[in-house]
Length: 415
Image (cartoon, rainbow, N blue to C red):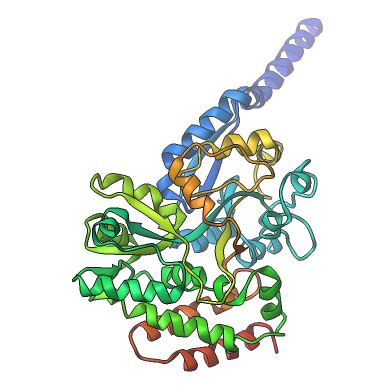
């Protein structure tokens, strides 16, 4: 009886042990599934194809879960605070992304092989924290440019302007024809700063070295260069459409595409939206510098990809980021980027999209820099949008706005 009891007990224990191991065995057998957050809700098709490619290579599934662009920052921060954030996520460059890293939400990537060697310093700068560590792998850059209706220009004998003064003269000629010169408005409350004014600014203040002087407080945002930029911006707004106060960024492509406007200042990311207008032959030119100034272009380090420190799959997350930091990974990812987004890795693959190549070529020979306030002065964002809107409505002057900018600059720098 004792022998039987002993065997029965052994079998019972073995059974219990097996039952305890079954969930672990099932978990081990299940393929890893990661999630990726993003503000690029327009890119579901392209990114899903890229993730399918990655799954073919590794067996790891990554589900793309984008958020409405203007809700991404607060939504992501709330998710991370609540422990419900995605495993991987698009990271804003400079101060906005660094804030999440310093809060402990983004993985430090100092152990990702090849990251420092495979990307230029200008690309790495956007996602390098104050402690010197990288918190995201650079993914794509964008530029701020002017779209124009090539057929309309040819029909009227209009030429692409080479200086800002020529741009204003052209705008008046277009207006005299009864056509809206620009398709821009201020209803979206972001593009007037990000696309228009910050797109203009490298033509007035120069590149990264000069920007650093403003960030250090050595130069003030009411100096001659800044006041000239605001004065030219004020002149430009006189050629916005009637009712521009209610025109949002999403309205611009239609105004240009339907022939109601001749030009539209926006980001390179919008280029694909013009494909739906069969009668539109769209062209591109850089926002021109005023006569005598060195031409510049806002080429912004826009999208990085970060890993969540709270992920349940840190090895798989780090593996994806390590792959993205290799020439093979970065160029594979770049082949799935929508038009108007540009890889930042050294020696990227040749672009195949002709429109994207034309836009990329606009930066040749120009001073390039990211959006002026992104690195150190992003706390000025709302104030700058408000002042630019007031200028456009004729409710303040460039001189008064410059004084507000300078005061806010001093506040942001603690001076």
